[in-house]
Image (tube, rainbow, N blue to C red):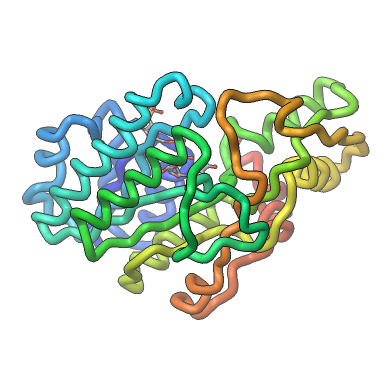
Length: 283
Ligand SMILES: NC(=O)c1ccc[n+]([C@@H]2O[C@H](COP(=O)([O-])OP(=O)(O)OC[C@H]3O[C@@H](n4cnc5c(N)ncnc54)[C@H](OP(=O)(O)O)[C@@H]3O)[C@@H](O)[C@H]2O)c1
């Protein structure tokens, strides 16, 4: 397939670019400098007549806390930018894949969220990502919306931050223990998104590594796998601070995706172990 990836220098975009290429697809990876999705004319120029079969829309405003003070910018990228890409895909007959987030949910369910469960985002980021889902369905239908959660796999983000703090001798490490989610190795997420594209999946699907834990549990497992005996002190989200409210529970039910692909998703513990074995590839 010929696939255009927006936001190609981001965590997910870069992984999709690499993996789709190794799987024999022809990939057009466009970074923000090469394609600003808020610029409708540039979006049209990149997609029209390019012979694409699919666009995987990884470009997004992802700064969850900063979005609280920059709601217009978050909306411009996540909603208007998505509308630009979805509408050209719709008129050109190109498959559109919108990447969304577990933060569209409020956490009140306290059981894994099904794709059809009612979304009720708590943050500006979550609200603008949900608006992106809505414009996708208004414009690009049929389309694929893939919700992901708690990605790791580059030099930034939670997992390397924990390892750095441990290396710096910070003890105990204070980590949020009242948010439960689904840590997901970006390589597994990217691979599953490509699988779904290859089988022509449609609708809203949830993708992630299976199981659930808190950030404190995840930190403890990272340190254990790294051979470090460091005490993690669980703290509340309120104590930890942060401008945006996050769901206290945002685990995604993966059953439908497993049925579509005919295979189980790996457990987050197995995925993390695999990642820790090859993390030097990433940093
Ligand atoms: N990371 C997670 O834990 C997580 C969890 C659930 C869902 N998701 C979703 O997964 C998708 C990918 O996220 P990610 O983790 O890969 O985030 P990321 O690393 O922040 O990547 C986002 C990319 O979008 C680019 N971008 C921002 N504004 C743009 C614009 N106007 N035009 C074109 N590109 C633009 C960024 O470029 P610059 O770097 O130049 O700004 C960056 O390369 C997003 O839809 C996100 O909501 C992520």
